[in-house]
Image (cartoon, rainbow, N blue to C red; front, side, top):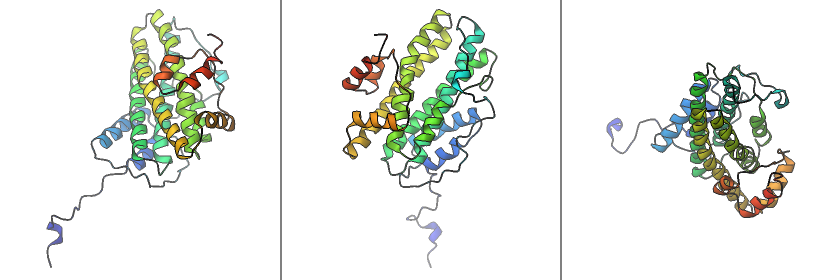
Length: 284
């Protein structure tokens, strides 16, 4: 009998880990810094061909999602007080709020990777890229927050972003419509005025982080638009009417101006959508 272990035709190396399963494991990670580092490493491993993507793999919800630390305390949005940016204390609260958004954005991207099977492989690569970039944003904000003598968890926060993930957990079309194209797109509108106020306060280091975030978030919303329209096309659905239906069905927040029309155009919103937004913009 030939020595099978020496046969060049058989590869006895273990298969590379499935990136979708790895995404679920990282989503369960409770430590924010570890989650951010692991999210970036997973995308790098996929890019290097070290982790495979199995679109057909069906995974079960472990029921403990998302992994997050004991702090920050999660409260109702209405109980969070706004503070001015002229003081370091006020800017620390703002940076913490932004870090919380980015931490949730890591979770949202990872959730899209593991939760929705039978999508094209590019879908998973796109959302792994988003997770890695959101992790980078979180790391930038955490480092800046440390320069103010604070850490993520020091201030209360709300859970609005993950709440929408829960509502859309059974519908990939709704997820694409209402997380990247609605909640994350609001960040395109909010970033420029926040950046302006930081710069006016002389905090150019924090303002520069907002520049990085806005640049990357345009790409993230563009990815959401891409897959929303892909799914609509596969189902022969009109994207505009479908969005309105899903926004009502899942109780999406009402859109309010001012809107960053240039960034939204770069992020893949079409002219009909921009005209509809212009009709909602009281500041125009």
